[in-house]
Length: 523
Ligand code: TNX
Image (cartoon, helix red, strand yellow):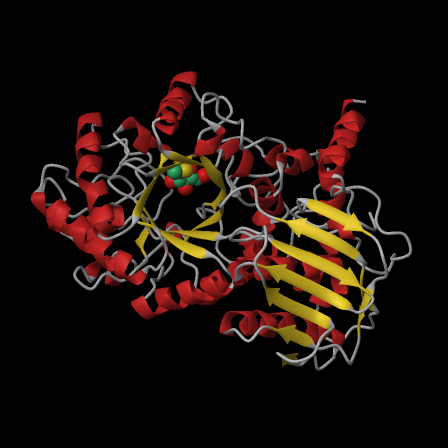
């Protein structure tokens, strides 16, 4: 009853259908408008469907960015439809991408579908790109295959108006515990883009490996990057590799947020340079999975030369606004030293033009003005610790939510999950979706919440299949929490929309966890 009332209210306020109601009658062969993940802000089904045929053209504005998105659409649609789908800036109808002034914000879009075509309109290219992800989901799942499929390729008629709830919709990949190649990162970026994720946070250094080239401290990578958990060969990104990741992510409208984790989680650096250690003795490389045993030497000046060089070189490689300095689990750094260290290091990030991001332990020091704290506690983290974060938020620190017992993608789904960890608990699909970022932390003003991020720690994960099995289906839920209006939040409806993603993942070659909580088709 409460839910029925809720949805009536929604319909009254929005004046439209909201994601989850019945699909368009008569458009059974098309992906219904109501099955999109993340749920759009508003959906109005109606009118004739559009059919993509051999004659369909992709119409673009005469801007480089829009044309590139047009080519991207063509690359998605050509293999499965077998149609030529030329990209052109002339004529009307077909699949049209246009920039126009309107109430879209930086990332929103409007999608209109009818007999003559599908038009996606946005104020910015990012909005067009997100609209294209919606269009993919309005087509049958087979559109994602890389060989010619029978079709027909119908897009249900109607209008979607969509804009994100939060500007920070992130995914973190730990490339330190196990190294992942540029191609593996690109593959994950493509998967993140499907769900309108817009931040790729790369955890580039930890005890087990240093993964980004720093010219002024070359042993960080040549030695510090030479192994990983379990003792494999590790690896690192050259500056050219990193730029290629940044470029590729930007082509999918993701901003890279690089993280150098300091002052703890630094064994790889300490092993590479003896002078960074308080006792001047370099420890051996580390290939285990313990945390909290390493610390930069807060009392040595060379530590700050080191941090300055690293931040300067990394900032120069990074067009994005943010630089993450870690700061978690510094169990081998005294509180006094931790505060001192953060007081000296945060201004360096600002000096090189970036905004500080840190794990929420940063709120135990003095977060710089405009800093962002990433909360990774649990539902039952102490009220005291949560209040520290909340107080910082009230003082102007932005909050990104990554509660570990909700959206740590490396947590096992059940006790039987072959991969992953369970220190934060077992996290089934419903649990990962069923919370509200706007009210999760008591005392945090809703305006301080920048968004949501789903971290993937890789102590137990070694290849793309491992990443995908842990990410899917939970990643889609994290993305929806970041994108969709709170009013669309409803597990019973979400699980139906989520189920419709299964065949898409199969078509894309993504192995996912077939959670019994989700009514997958054909099961
Ligand atoms: C906690 S979360 C960590 C990581 C581990 C992760 C494993 C955080 C900021 N620190 O060092 O990899 O747990 O789930």
